[in-house]
Image (tube, rainbow, N blue to C red; front, side):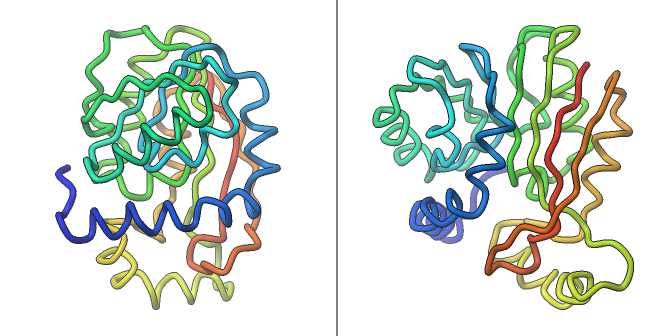
Length: 208
């Protein structure tokens, strides 16, 4: 997917501004999720590099990031955190890497925006070696008739437009579970953020 020249720039700026806030809201959960990352990690949609603070200095990041307006900020963040970045300017549905070539894939708040999330998860499964892991933290569709479900329905269309296709009502957990991983662990919780439509979230691990 090619980034919109207007919204792509706006989103790059917004994500840069909100970096510290995202860390305060999700930092502890991310630290636990990323506690034992290998030396080389592939991340889909790393954006402006909000996860780099959780990677060890010296980590090599394979960055699957199709929005070119994120690239400069991502490289600068990598330099600050001592991370080496290999940019792969492709969509998550077609990652230019061989089968079984990656130990760990990271996906945080990005499968909501991928045009075909099922294809993206299948592609992640393809590039993971046997025993390799997908570590994910994603917002998901609220269950039942909760207040969050109402908020998501009311904001779905404007949210999708402003955030370049971000879908607040996707059942991303079901997508991951249906992909064919050997095991999937997903913990559901409500993030304490001001951005109510994306507060219903899951975090966990899928093993090939």
